[in-house]
Image 1 (cartoon, rainbow, N blue to C red):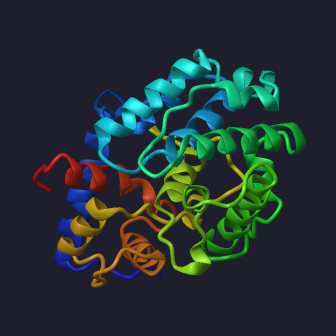
Image 2: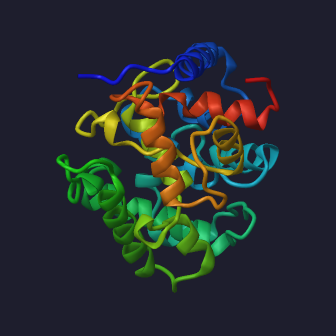
Length: 265
């Protein structure tokens, strides 16, 4: 039997639902989600979404600039580009640096992704190798996924700060904002998100937390924690389940952009 919402909770749910519906496809920009939205082939969407999420840190103009440069290198065909480029040719491509990702880090990322698509068929099949459908959320599955990505990357380049940052581990306390963002895009299905990985329940997703989401969530009393961490992400997600137990992360885009665009909630 569902618990009844208090008056305060009903008011918050009403606002959350309003903002969730407000941010439709026409209001995505500026957001890295713009890049995978350009494709219809599932492999192009998956690859573009993962790359967009990996670079989704820093200020928005910088993120969009980097992703535009990468899109140009892709020639608007990410999957064909990746699978058709020999490993040694990645070292000749002038990839952009991005904050503390060096050019070598970015080249290692694309070699790692090429290896995954050659040996596993897609990122989904690598993730599902260690997916636990009976668990409350994707914490352990995500940990295995990141560790596997990092181990593959180490075959191509010594571990660097940038490479480690690309593949964070929730078991070490990281909020894994970019990984959770990718999973939201690729698991959920609505106007914004793609719903390509139907094997994973939306109820298992964890909200991607950055400083904007953390600040708004504290204001909305969705968390009492001060430091952004996996624990904070779980706490916010559990509070959002009061409003939608099956799809709590649907509110993420609205919460994030209310903070980033300095809108009134």
